[in-house]
Each structure stands twice: as C-alpha cells, then as structure tokens.
Image 1 (tube, rainbow, N blue to C red):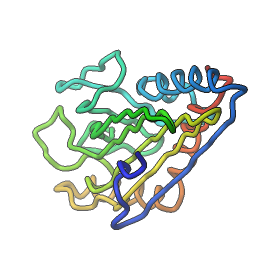
Image 2: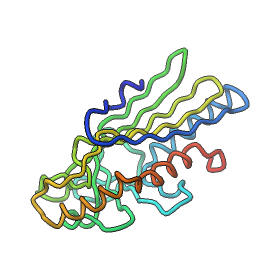
Image 3: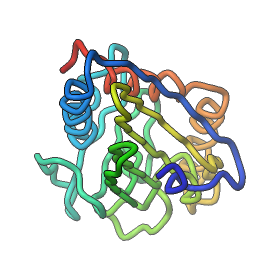
Length: 201
C-alpha cells in the first residue's frame, strides 16, 4: 500500500507519523474504524487539532459546502492561517486524487491523497495553491495486529510561482518558502496527532 504514496521525484518532501498499541486486536480494529471515519470527515479536521489550524471544506462546482464524508474526485477548499491567495478568494484548493482501502492477512489500510488544483468556481485554470500540481499530500492509516499507525507524506513540494497573477506568485512564494522551511509541519503533525489521539474518539 505504501507504494501508492506518490514517489518523491523533485522538490521537498515532508513526513510525520504516530503509532499506538491497543489492548487487543479487536480494540485496534474498532479504533481503526474510528480513525478512518475521522480521516474521511474532512470538514472537521480543524476540530481534532490542538493548535491553530487550517480549515478544510468539501465543496461542489459552485463552491457551496458539502456536508458529507469525502469522496474521490472531490474538491477541498483550504483556508490557511496567514495571507490567502488573491485570485482564489483567499483560499487554496486541492482535489481528492485517490482514496484506496485494502484488507489482507497482514493489515487493514486506507490511503487518502490530495493534489493542488485550480479554483473550481472560476474560469482561471491556474493552480490555486502555494505548491504546484506536482505536489501531493497523502495520509496512510494502518491497523496491524494491536498497532495503529497514522502517516502523513508530503511529496514533490515545489513553490507555485508560474501563475498569471503577480500577486498570486508573490503570496505563493512567501507562503511556500515558509512551508518549505517547516511552517507546514506543525499543521500536519497536529492533524496526525489528532487522528491518532484516543481522547478524541
């Protein structure tokens, strides 16, 4: 399943993970289902982090919020702390590229992968994100025996400065440099910790 995480080819990568051991395999199976549910409830991700966090909202083609679990092909609007993207109403946008689930004798797993995309509410086809469309963000959750592991993998993180708007490119450069210097790590670490936190279940 880990080979479904996009390969690191260029730019920067970022990884963080957390694992915990439950009292029994049955308890671990139940815990996995709860973590899986939290992963797919994207609109509430900011509620499980114990820190100032970006807010993630699943939206339809007109930008109206959708109150449901995430599905492959969905578009997610992100409101990050700090300056927003001028041409995209202050938001960054990603699409849900992949949701893969697998069960075998060894383990039960779910993988969710996001990729920067254009703002679906506008005719502008520029990538509405501070990273280019080469970048991906993947979450892999695995239950193996009594152990639950949550892994975040950021891949091919290249700052997006090729948009038509100079203001967009300046903002993306500033936010992207911050992210590459480690500013995005606390966000993803808090989300990983929130998903794996037994107190939140």
